[in-house]
Length: 433
Image (cartoon, rainbow, N blue to C red; front, side, top):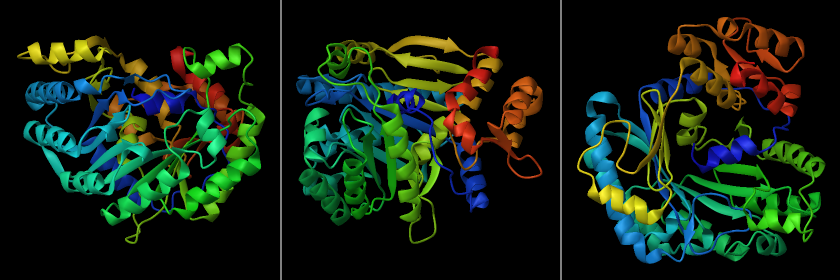
């Protein structure tokens, strides 16, 4: 799983009631497209500074290795693409540059990587190409060149509009950087922007968060990703909490913030389609969900490229080595690979059908609009949801934590109460319990 998925799985599951799926035909079309397509995740580990809460595979002070890293990434893409021709002959419909700070790479490097992708894989004309960016690392000229290279979706790590909170998080930007980044992005032709924000900080007040959300909404992004702050072992934040230099996040306050935010975004015209994600429609009536992340939540195949990148294909989980130098050396030395392994493979884990079913329940139930689709589950595993998890479903429906969608029982979803107790629900499915 890539970084966002760990972040999502660790976050608490308290949410307010979500709007029903008003466009089931759109859901069905997206699902059909994803089932016959693959996604590519490209990890860019470089950062100027490691934030206080970050436990992802990032590195600072190694920018001199960026050219060699780009060459290695292109080599890995070429080798895996060649090996995938017969084993996974599906077109690519989403590409995601994550990190780290992908916006630290020159636009020409992004263009070079995308060129390697297009030479190695069949890429659909409407491919979604997302790039994570720190607002303080972009320029108008650079954004123009990124758009010309094919990037059509940007995800800005805004995190907060409050100066004190940005300092606490050790972010390397201020709100004026965010304002400029959004303005430049629009002028450069980007029509699909996401803002990442973090709530539930120590000593954060509801009022302070409300100001952040009001400012963020005034920027008119198409998408929001909102995360509750978690204290991860090994981070500076973890050390601060252990030494009593700051308090641990308040779960009750985080829940209050989340519920207020859900109502606020609904009034602002955003639809919640996943526990931590909201989207609004464009002028054509299309709900601008993150199609790449839907690939994860639907437990569909994706290939991971780069240091510490993970993938899921052919019934296997893959994980690359984490060290940048080791990754470069292995990629440049390799001549061939055996799919789904890449030249920098660190681990290859075969998954049983039972494990895949359990994981599908864990990630699929995060989708507030569609849940786990009964027909899709049956087609994939040859078992109905009721046959795969009879005791768990009966127990959780009886407890008011799960519900069937519609009289035809087309999908299984968390109830409002079930979303409050999401971890409890998931434990029923994971590990054969």
